Image (tube, rainbow, N blue to C red; front, top):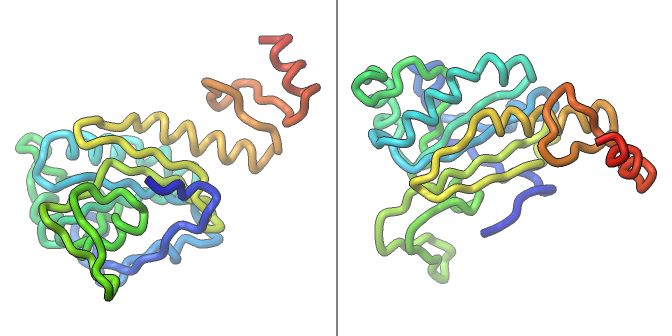
Length: 210
């Protein structure tokens, strides 16, 4: 598994459903450079069981992300038509109607491969083409990307393990606190709690109080 933290987030341009009702052909993350943070999360498959709980959970917290100037973007290896059909289904029937953030269609699997969250047996031939021996879907990868396009946090869960959306918000808070104050965030830090100076003296002072 590649570690992308500290590196430029891989660029892509792909079809996506935005605002829950519009298909665009050239969605990309470059539009956010210099302007917004990005939470890019991958999920395995449309019309499944754990996935809608995650997508709705992100929607429920979308206002909190937007307050922090964060764009939330979802991605799976399904087609944009599959995303559209799922968006037409109500939550009560297992659908994701009401989701407004973009859902990217990684139909050629290159986005998932470049972020190293592609699950399944595959390889590349001499021409650099991807060759698969079975179904290829994405693990539950999550990437926090700063306004300069650098990955600051990544988390990858196996297929049965749903994510904690509050933890994603906590990581946004920690990143922004560090950027604004220069202090670092200790274990179990949450917004409003004390941080510490990145020095031996700062650590000693923090531990003495806590």
